[in-house]
Image 1 (spheres, rainbow, N blue to C red):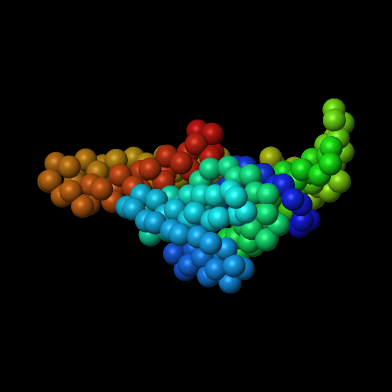
Image 2 (cartoon, rainbow, N blue to C red; image 1 turned 90 degrees about the horizontal axis):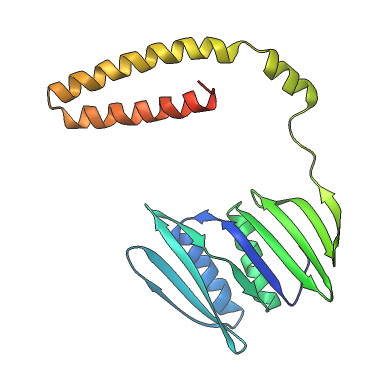
Length: 198
């Protein structure tokens, strides 16, 4: 990834464990940054002094993992490199905008890999790189001709009916744990039905 003196990170979708946050703190300290961090039941906050500016990286707790939230404008090359290392290591998603002279280079990153690179100059934009889709036209034709979705739909309806009867019995007999498990299975069946467009 290119270096720039001003980089904006948008639509960050990075998920990681506590160890990766600790590694980030360690890397920041090794690079000589002045920082402090705090933690609550909901957030882990790292405040990094970058020149005269204070950058606050916010991590939201999601069960026993964390995800970074917010958009960030970074004007420090080393800090940008560390944030990009975090995107890469966590195989995250992001839109990275690099401001240079009168140009903006926009990188779309998915699973830690650049999938699209666009250069914007005034009103003009030019696609520098775009990753080829993983699905070929032949594979799409096969998917449309496949009868697997219709066959699965029939089985899915039977599974749904069965699971509803299991839930009914569990509620009637006041077996709360079984009812909760049944609701989870129904939720996953519902998602599958949506995916099959039933």
